Length: 170
Image (cartoon, rainbow, N blue to C red; front, side, top):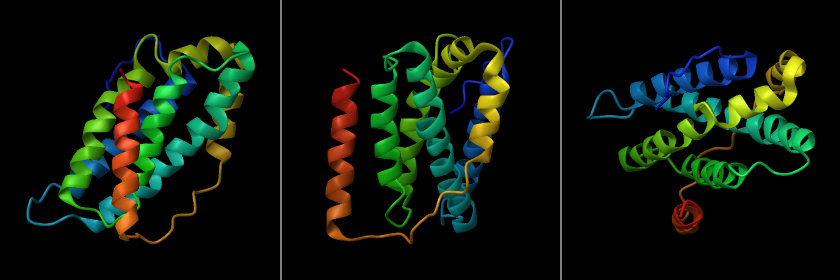
């Protein structure tokens, strides 16, 4: 799901694109055996994706907004994706849920990694302070992850977020 684009990548791109690759590997490992979900890989993916989202939502996007004086146009779409992805990580993993996560990431990651994507835009905005921004992202503590919850409303909530995501991309 990572685009693998390298072109003179700066530290923001290098950190977050490498994390995309790591997460892609964990997600693939989680469903490598069609007869069962590898829960260890799935749990590592869940923790990792939530931390990755936190780095973008708590550090990268606010810094881009501060530097540009406005929210980046792509930020709304990325936030809709982040909300849907986070919700999909709440229930116990299923092959269908993992497939939906993979589909979202295949559309989401190019918005971040592309030549005009979030990471390149942030590299331009922060300039020489890119290394300091990367250190702020690395310094974020691990995300506290609750136990899976499979109550009836979580699936309704996921469907609402997926619809909102799809509408936001039109």
